[in-house]
Length: 184
Image 1: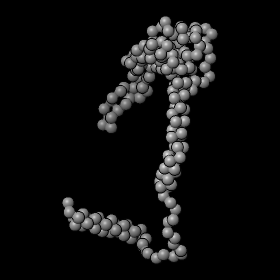
Image 2 (image 1 turned 135 degrees about the vertical axis):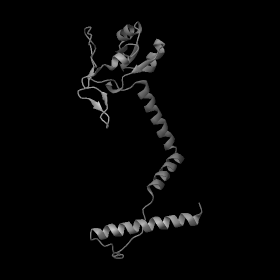
Image 3 (image 1 turned 180 degrees about the vertical axis):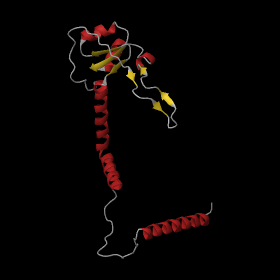
Image 4 (image 1 turned 120 degrees about the vertical axis):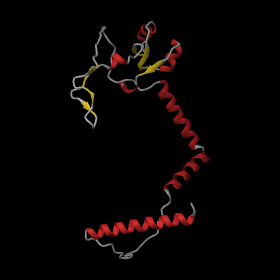
């Protein structure tokens, strides 16, 4: 497509949009007028925010501050990986308990397409845990408690820490260790 063709298309689009705007404004009794410039008009003199940020980054890079900040950030990340924030409000169990959780969902009403075809009947029950299982049991422990670590070591399942160092424990046990981030 040539420049001339593009210019012609632009001119037509502009004319159509201008005509539509004028006819719409005429329909509602509005007239567009150019009242010119009134008052003082000042040029934009502020520096570009992007240029200010880049200048500060360049200055920090030249002074070595940027490298220092990057190293500090890397150390903070390493510390968070080695020892994530423990799950709050948990205490050591004092007795064995088993809890049964029923995740069954009951659909109250029919679910239909826009054409009225029923996809799911009302009253349908589904338990996702009957379809998808966790595989291995999840063993949630405090990785800083040697008794809990010893107990979990002899059990099959995925070890999930609520406190402690997952990397250190993974190396000690020779298997993957997960961490329950924020109690989820």
